[in-house]
Length: 512
Image (tube, rainbow, N blue to C red; front, top):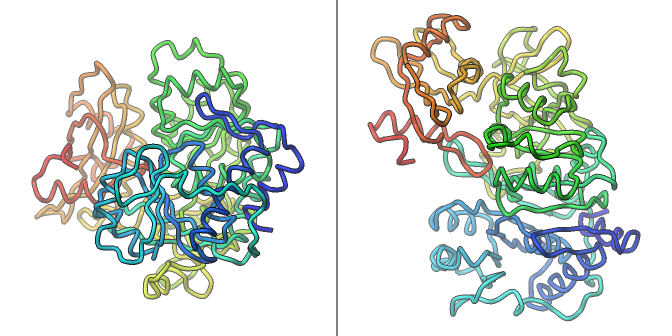
């Protein structure tokens, strides 16, 4: 079994079923498979060989899905690139991944041209939707007329993806996966979330990210779901299409749920088709989670708490577990073992903080071209996540912070997520991020970056008073900075290391 075969089987089994809806364009599973085969055969005709790395710098679209599956059917390795990166950052990934070809939206023609100018291994630059620059190709130049299955053998142990980490702490690293690992991600996701062919999925999170790509795009195609694709997240468009297409399952990062709640007259949309929701990729404040349950009219919410290197995989919390364990990450996913250990690799006692580590056949093989980083991360078969967590008496694990984001003030450990959860309870705060800043007396002090709700006015002293009702004195933000938005990467994760850099250098956070 390999990922491309899951599409081919559905083309035979349910050829007339709607596979993709993207704007006015629709594909049945037979049509989807035919377009993929034409491009896969075109890649082979151009000399792309099994195991070659082929990058994509594309926003969500029907073409993203076609290009992704074509790469895999050709036996090549897909390398999705964050479309918000600069030319320098994209150049680094193209070089680091040994990519020989890159597909990109026309929006990024000049960026890709700049990124690839000194790259001697990059043979093809393929613009998918506009007239290419002189040294580039159009998508039609790469497509073959042959729509039959590519004449190449792909095994489940062949490499399939290199997914670059979100780079919240510096340069990203490429996590390498084979088909077997990703197929098991899809199987586990389908079982945990009770997904089936009858489900209609809405893709709004970026597909270059492991959650949207592996948990939902690969799973949705594996099952034969109808998948509605949005190029990017627009709250009103999401509500409109949930009603229009009777979406049955919705996944979003916490920020997306927050913005859906802010849509004027949102209650006028009929969201009753949504039977289950999931959230992940960043911490979900309890207050926001409770409001989101009320908004969608269902308590069938799943917490998916993992990381790119895990597939993504880690722990999850079922809807019924939210009744007694809301705010927790959950217990280990299927085919996964999870522990919380101290610096001596001993399991911590309930209530103690340690590092979450996991072992799974879904986790990455290694970091591509980075043996030293791999050795630091994978030890004796265990993936060391860098996430600090606690485990309770019932075995439920809750993340409290990243190791590098923990604040130490006056010798006391302060977990930024705990302070953020309190700030999100404030009625006038839309978003919040907490970091540590250097302090001559205490070592570090707590700094809160907050975004007020539209029309809201914030009294900083009142916010501190509010926090004192829920937090020990040493956890109270000593400084509050108001901003129009929180700096995040395209995966929705707060760029705390950049916020810390800006504070230390005296630069405005808005410049990030």
